[in-house]
Length: 217
Image (cartoon, rainbow, N blue to C red; front, side, top):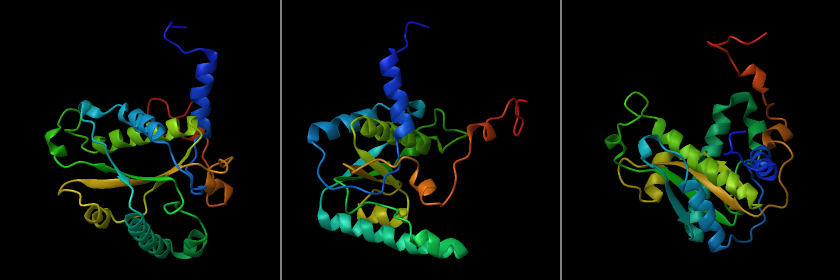
């Protein structure tokens, strides 16, 4: 051990949060205490970011009418997605894809305008701003699980329409609708696995050595 490692109990908690995190769609309403929400958002804010650009912006949705408008945007995209899926469209329509009207807290994560000013780490990979926001969302997700709260990431929306609804400045872009709050239980496996939409791939199939497609053994 290096001397910087956590205790056995602390490590077990970290790995448990990772293992039991789920993309939740079923919520029980309720509320998230302000101090708890503050802790969760601080955890998100402590995420790593390329060039220390911290490109995450979180918009807390508090007005019921605005929440309903967001839900309607998601429903529009849900129908278009079903159409694009062709023969799997009917199967897709049976899935619950969001908990916008049921969750205690609704957040929108967005990329800010002016991102082109940040060149460090993005000259050849400009999408690293999005990767940094994803790290913040994952921090929020894991912290929520450790606090016993569920979170769901909704990506079924037209970014331009949602940006206009939330009055984002030109150049900014919403990337995630985040449903957060108490749940009756956590899915034992990812919901899409539970409902037969797909199967998880084992790590061994996704791990290569010294080049693409090259696997040990």
